[in-house]
Structures are given as structure tokens and as C-alpha cells.
Amino acid sequence: MNALLQQLQNRQLIWQASQTEAPYEHCQSTGFTALDKLLGGGWPAHNVVELQSHGACAELQLIQKALAGSGSELLQVWINPPASLCAEYLLQQKRPLHQILQLNAPHSADALWAAELCLKSGSCMDVLLWQNSLNLTQLKRLQLAAAQGQSQLYFFRKAQSEQQLLPWALSLQLTPATTGLQIRILKRKGGWQQQELVLPWAELYPQFIKPELQHEQHGRPPLSRVS
Image (cartoon, rainbow, N blue to C red; front, side, top):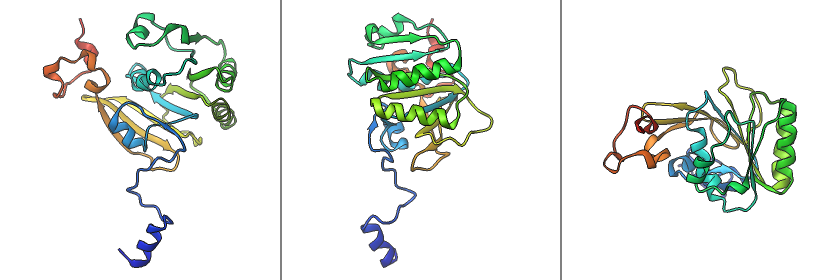
């Protein structure tokens, strides 16, 4: 390496594209080693994460370890989920039901208002919001509320054919693949976009994989093998 470039690198005055250091002040582990490495540490804490998908492709399973691993006694609020919450499933995930609240808002403006209040209240650790539209002003308000209340917002919406140029701390597109869930970075603060990985179904759903099949690749999600 050129001596001048080496000197600048030693003084941390240049950045290399191969560096994967966390671009966020605080991160929360996703619970998946490969995904943590891709994201530079994990989910950006006290911020807004966008998860785009076509629905029902393990997007909830992707964040379950972070939700269950927070160890907080604060509330987790689900706003306008696509279906009613299943108490049996939540108990299987070791989630205390008294800490989980489902809100159904009739209009998108009401849902955003509820999310903002929950985020900055100091009473909520995580907020999950399902909504298909968001503008810059609304995103900024949600980011400010998350920082103020030291809370986390996971924003779920359908995959977009044309991407909005919004300043997400992190935006991911999720697509089911043959061997696992394809995770593609659409936007990441301080990092490269268009990076991706495939998280094996066996890691997302280990409870449905037989021990002798743990190291094999499968042609369909493990849930389909449950009778």
C-alpha cells in the first residue's frame, strides 16, 4: 500500500469498502450471526427499521430473537398486524402476554399517531407497525420519537416496485428462496446497499427441523413439513 495511504488509514482518516464496522451508535443483535455480520452488528437501536416483503415469508421470525431477547419489562405494541395475534404462538416464543398489546387503527394517520405516542412514551420497548405508505416528514417524526423514548420501531410493508428515497437507518427486502429467506439491504446508514444473504430455514425454524436434517438444504420452508 502507498505509504501516504497507509498513514491516512492508520489515523482512521480513510474508509475501506471492505470494512463492516457498525454504522450506528448502538446495535441490538438479531440473534443470527451471519445477519449481524452483514448489518455491521445488528439492528440499529432506538431507530426505525423497514422490512419489505410480500407477506408471510418469516418476517416476524426474523425479529423474534431480538424481541424476546430484550429482557425488558416494557410493552411491545403491534399496530394493525395482518391477522389477530395468536397467544399460543407468543407463549411458545416465551413472550409474556401481559407485555404485548395489539392496536387496530382504522386509518393510516391514526396508526402513525399511535406509533409515535408509543415510541416516545418511555413505556414501550418495541413497536411493530404494518402500513404501506410513509413520507419523509412522518419518518422523521417516528425516528425522533424512537430516539426520545429509547424504543424500536419495525415498519412492515409490501415490497415496493419503485423505492422511495427515504433516510431509513436500515431498510431490508425479504424474499422466500428455496433454501431460506433472502435478505437484501436496500438502505443502510453509513454502509453499502444491495448486499444480501440467504438465511437458512433451519436457522429461522430450528424447532421444525429434525436433528438429522439440520445440515441439509431443503426445497421448501420447514413449516410445510408440519402435519
